[in-house]
Length: 177
Image (spheres, rainbow, N blue to C red):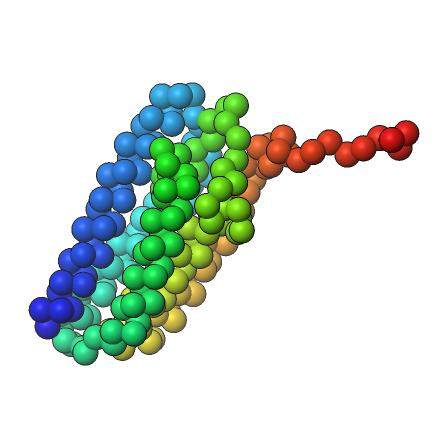
């Protein structure tokens, strides 16, 4: 049981640290003239993640399942991916959609290969951590809910970043060229 509690405590501390970093970065981005877009879905994301983690705590404490270390290793690989995302975005990383006029899109790190690497990590986390505790039904239930929320979030983010993507596109050659 100590291993279960240790794992969930570390995940909880990580989430709280990420929220602290996100709030700090959000404040700085807004001070630089950033504008938050798509905020209508943010409370849904917060609620989903809070209920997911609280439910994991409840189920793990009341059922004391055995930990599947292979799935914990997979989860740790995802967390390395999260670190890569945060490092690539630096002070731009936040849990909200903030667009700063004049900024360009990040195209380094995982963003060189995939448009939304953070959401890939989140989808994996929501699914894999419950599986590590043998909670397959929980993983599928919250995985599906999370995919719905991510679909909403990605659409909002793509719309917010559309002007920056258009600026980053090279101009099309004229017919004379």
